[in-house]
Length: 137
Image 1 (cartoon, rainbow, N blue to C red):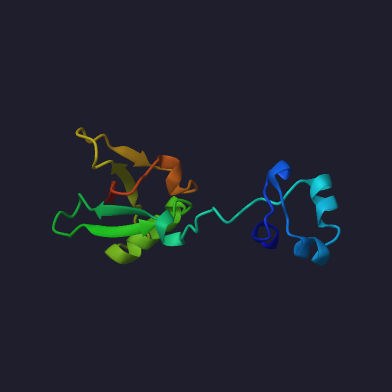
Image 2: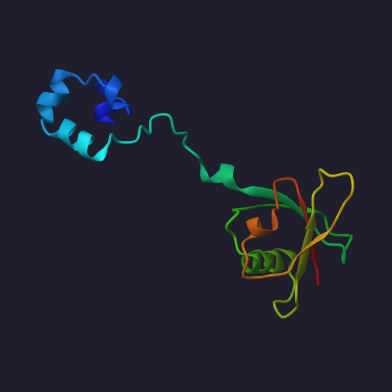
């Protein structure tokens, strides 16, 4: 960071580092010539964890009286963990088998895709924000 603030660039031909920096770090330019300049991270965006979450609506076709539930999951969340959380929230016996599937609410035709492997992450099934997950038991 200090290298870039003192006028350093990723492209060594454009670099004009201040004399103050070179005096403070006399071997720095040798290291850059040998190993390359450091990556400029000042332009990288800070990605917050909440921005990565997939927001879905959960419906229960077996019990149409229940209101739809809005849930947010990280793409790396395992299907087994989602099932466990839904069983708790829907107050379903842990012994019952919860079967999940989803459809995209954005498409005109609603093609139901089964979520059938508990060991896979939810992103494996290409679930995106706005999709609807159906929970059956």
